[in-house]
Structure formats: structure tokens, C-alpha cells
Image 1 (cartoon, rainbow, N blue to C red):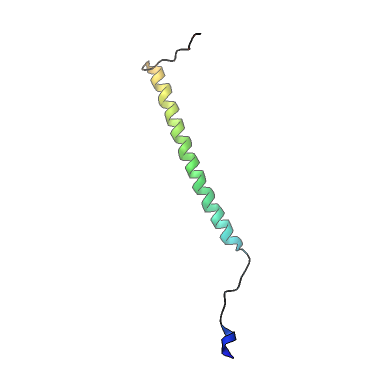
Image 2 (cartoon, one colour):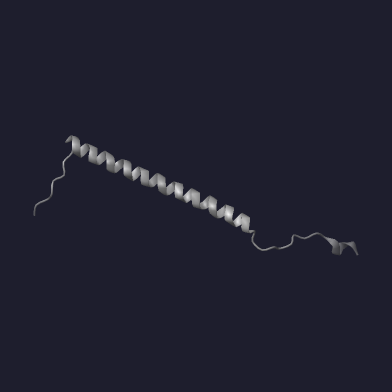
Length: 64
């Protein structure tokens, strides 16, 4: 009965090295996105204060 000798994929537990690599990759990707967002916000803030210093814009408090 050779039919019983079919090779099946054996189920193993999670690979620790694979899990670490996936976690590291996802962490670096998310960190890169966060840094790009932070740099963009920093650039906008710097541009605002530069324009304010040059007198191109003014901040007026609303009096009520």
C-alpha cells in the first residue's frame, strides 16, 4: 500500500528568526513613516516662523 506514503507538510511552530525579521521590518517601516511625517510638520512650522519673522504674515489676537 504505497498510497499511505504521500508526503505531507508537517506543521511546525512559529520560526523565531522569521518572526524577529518580520517585526524588525514592520517596525523600521512604521518608524520611517513617522519620521517623514515629523519632518514634514517640522518643515511647515519652520516656514511659518520664517514668514512671521520676515513680516509676510502677522498673528493678531481676536478681541471680543
